[in-house]
Image (cartoon, rainbow, N blue to C red; front, side, top):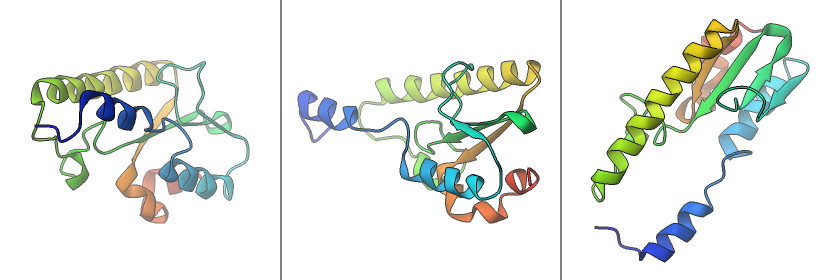
Length: 132
């Protein structure tokens, strides 16, 4: 059972940022020091990628471990309450992610997914280091 009222929970959820989150800012700084001309939160491409590197024809999605269900990650645990809402919500997010990545690859883009738990060790993330 949720410990907050519906109105309080709604207010809390409405404050969750969709761009310029701490992990996103760290990722952009990391890339900006190594690659020229990166675009962020690109609304004209399917899935509204977090980062686009046109010169490398590469798209980077920075996924929240909880919201996109990072497999075997401790941050991806589902809440114990209101499972009838959360299970389909997270499953739909995962299905949409797969569909979007597949479509973008068919369009000729390389697609990289970075998980929020990986942002602290970007220098060890081989898919990113291959871009430089």
